[in-house]
Image 1 (cartoon, rainbow, N blue to C red):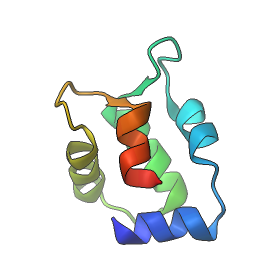
Image 2: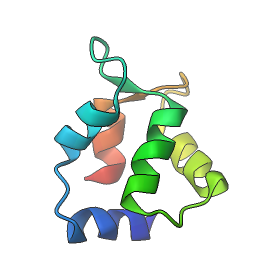
Image 3: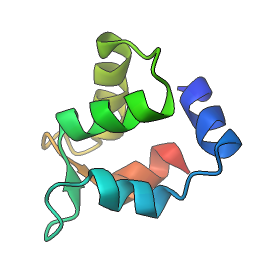
Image 4: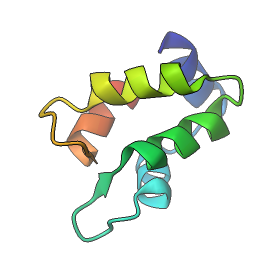
Amino acid sequence: MKSVQLNILRKNIDFLAAFEKFSKKMLTKTMKKSDIHIFLREIDPTITTYEADQLFLLTDNDKDGKISLQEFKSIFC
């Protein structure tokens, strides 16, 4: 997790732009697990599926199977 956060800082990634880019459901502003996988692999190509799954579970606070902008901000900012 820390390495992903460091990569975001190092690459000067705009988290809101990243969320909007990878969020397929623009009306509800949520990301699915597959969106998070793609986002994380763009940040760190060495991240494993297991690590991406764990970050998704950690980020999905309400356990609805989606990541809201608030949940995204809580982890990636």
